Length: 298
Length: 309
Image (cartoon, rainbow over all chains, first blue to last red; front, side, top):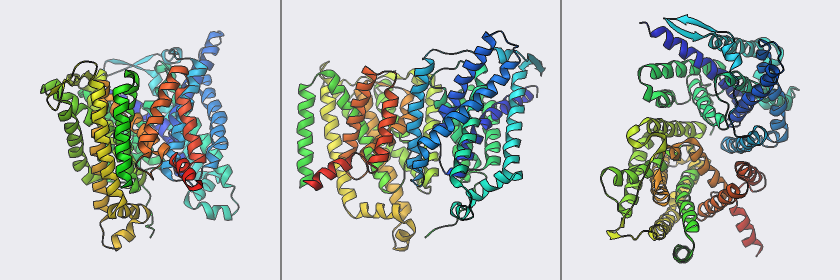
C-alpha cells in the first residue's frame, strides 16, 4: 500500500513529460498527416537552448527563479524560429507525397539536425541542475520527492488545457478543425491552409522544445537524447489514436503508469513494458484508442 | 537468361573481390551484402505497398540466433549459423505475420516498430546475453571445413555472395511472375484484388514472411562479418537505415538494394573518416536530394541512361 502512491506519482510525472512531447507530435499529424521524426531533434534542441539560455542567466548572477522563464523562452525561440524554418524551407514543397515518404523526409531532417546540434554545442554533456534543485523536496509516503516534478505535472496540465481550449474555443482553433476535416473545402471557403500548416508546425515544434527545455534540468544533455524520445512519443500517439489530443493524454498516462509500475516492481521490464503496451493496444484496437473512423475508398 | 548472366557475373566479381582485396574492403563488402539482403526483403514487402519500420527485429533475431549457436550450443559452423539465422527469423515472422498481415500503412509500420522495440527492451536488460554490450561470436568451420585465421572473412564473403545471388534470383522469379503482379495489385487497390478472387491477406503474409527470413539471413551475415552482436541491431534507427537504403535504391530492380547498400556503406565509411561530425548530415542531405530529384531512387539514373542509349 505504501508504494502505490509513489508509483502513481512517478507514473503521472513521467506521463506529463510524455504528454508535452506527444501533444505536438499528434497535433502535427492530425493537421498535416506528417509523422514527424524531426520532433525528437526539436526536443533535443529545446533542451540545448534551455541549457544555454538558463546557463547564461544563472552565470550572470541574475535571480535563480528567473531561470524558469528562460526555459520557457528557450522553447518559444526554438519553436518560432526553427519550426517555421523547417516548414517553409522544406516541408511545404513535400505535401501530397506518400505518408511513408514524409516520414523519411523528416527522418532526413532529424539526421541533419542531430549533427547541427553537435556542431553548435559540441559532443560533451551539458548540465543545468539549478532549476531542478531550486523548489526543493516534499515528503510522500516517507520518501522525499522533488517539487520540480509537481511543476512538470502542472505544466503538462496547463499546456493540455491551453491547446484544447485554443482548438475548441477560439475561431482559429475551429479553422484548424475545419482544415483537418476537409482541406479542399476549407480552401474553397477562403481559409489560408498554407498559413494554418505553418502555425501548426510552429506550435508543434514549440511543444517539443518545451518538453526538452523542462527536461534539461533533470538530465545530462548529451547528443542522442532525441533518438529515444521520438519512438516513445510515437508509442504514445499511436496508442491514443494518431491525431487525437485526448488520446495522447490517455496514452501518456497509460504508458507512464505502466512504466512506473515496471520500474518499481520489475526493473528489467522497463523498456519492454512500454512497447508491450503499444503492441497490445494496437492488437486490440488496430488504430489506437481514440481513432477517427475513416470511410473506405474503392 | 539475362538474370543468370548477371548472377554469374556478380558471383565472379564478388569472389575476385573476396580473394584479392584488403581486409577492410572485404569487411565493408560483407556488411553491404548483408544489408543488401535485408533491403531486398524489404523490397518484396514494399511491392505490396507496406513499409516495415521494424526489420531490425529480424535482423537482430538472425544475428543473435547465429551467435547463440556458438555461444551456448558450441556449434561454430558458419553454414549452420546462416541457416539458423534465416530459419529462426522466418519462424518468428510466420507467427507475427499472422497478426501484422491485417494491418496497413502507418499502423503496419508502427506495430512492426513496436515488436522490434520489445525485443530491444528484452535484449538490453538480459544480462545472460551481454545486455547493451552484446557478445562476440566466432565461426571456426564452414561445412565442417576448418577455417584458418585471417581467411575467414574472405570465405564468409564468398558464402555471403552465394546466398545473396541465390536469394536475388528467387526474388527475381517471384516478383517477375504472377505473384509479383498480385503484390503490385494489393498495393494499388486491395479491394479489387479481393474482388477478383485473390486473398490480399495471403499475399501480404507470404511477403512478410519472406522479408523476415531474408532480414534474418542478413543479420546472420552481418554477425559473421562483425564477429559481434548487440541490441543496437534491433533498435529503430537500424530499421530506419534499411528503409533509408531501400528508398535510396528504389524498389523497381532486384539489383538496386545491393547497389544502394554498397553506396550507403561507402558513404558511411568515407564520411565518418573525413567528416566524423557531419556524416549523419551528409546522409540526411543525400536522402532529401534523392526524394526531391529522383523519386524512384538511384535506379532511375541507370534506367534513364539505358533509355537514352
